[in-house]
Length: 298
Image 1 (tube, helix red, strand yellow):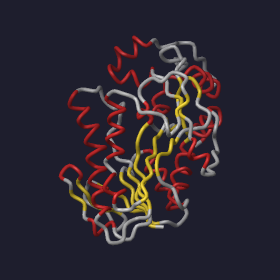
Image 2: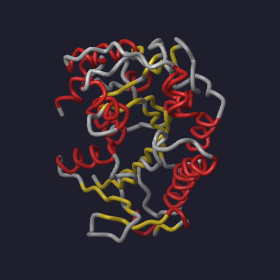
Image 3: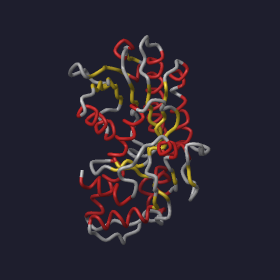
Image 4: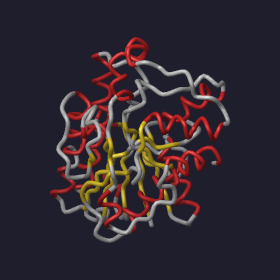
């Protein structure tokens, strides 16, 4: 297969690229810097610049672009960065694919857990659940809508709503590990909120499943089938690190330290991957215990 990936230097993009290349597939990375070889495609989303001719004849395109949700406080300027890095880049890529003579069979475009809101309690959230309200839910809805031109051109579009992808090198788990290894970890905001997680090997396997499985189209929750509360996640992580987890972080402390971003940590979203399971995908690490172990052993 020939697969183009935007956001290929991120945690998920790197892992997916390595997996595809290890199996002999050709990966073309969309890059914003000068290209370093035949395996890279130059583009500049800030000015709407991508050469459609370089996208001809691909089997699949995977769009993972987007500034980090938790990288900065949500100032007005950074919120605009979050929107542009998702909606503008996705629309540019979708428009380019729609103009191709030989378009890809499938276009996988990232979305996020916060499509469903910031806090839905213990409600089980499937792909058919209603969206939430607020900045992030609206961002996710607009992000998904930015692929409409590709859909109209007959390309199968898959929206992958990612949960917390567990990787010791970065993301939420990467930020937690130094604290827990120092014996300073504990439940966040009471620990009663559900965290929808997924191991990195399962992220990669699920993306490849959607690329390779004929008929893949529509919304897919990329999360473990067994979400757990933050308190349970904390206990499992501490146990595997052989450290205590007795220092809780109250909600008010999160708000002081993180501002508006704190709602993404304190809120409860209990997602399940109904459509992936129905399509026949099998998780290697369905539980928090196995997913955390896989991340620590990677």
